[in-house]
Image (tube, rainbow, N blue to C red; front, side):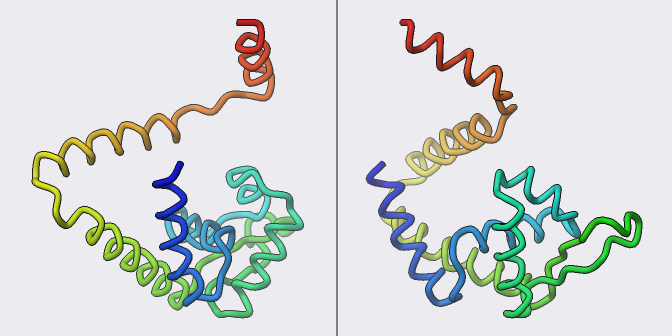
Length: 147
């Protein structure tokens, strides 16, 4: 947890430069990765309330990082997209992260970097793997509390 805290604190410096909160950054990165997305899909994929998605997208729009339009396919839905300026900001933030992380591991030997990279990829794959449904989560929690 200490490592996560320290990395988050250092990444916060880049976020302050960008004047966006971490949720807005997550939305922007999602749009950069997935392309134009309906607001309903953003809400589901990011596990956020619709009002939170709307509020953050308004901030991203006013900063020129995203646009929200009526979905041409489903006029009842709204479609969010990242702008060129938003893409540039995502790239800049990613570069800040790479620079900071490179400084952290600068004195590691190649074998240590390889082991760490392998384990970090494994962790990321595990975290982003299939998610439990609410029913499965409750069953798991009930089981662990019984043990």
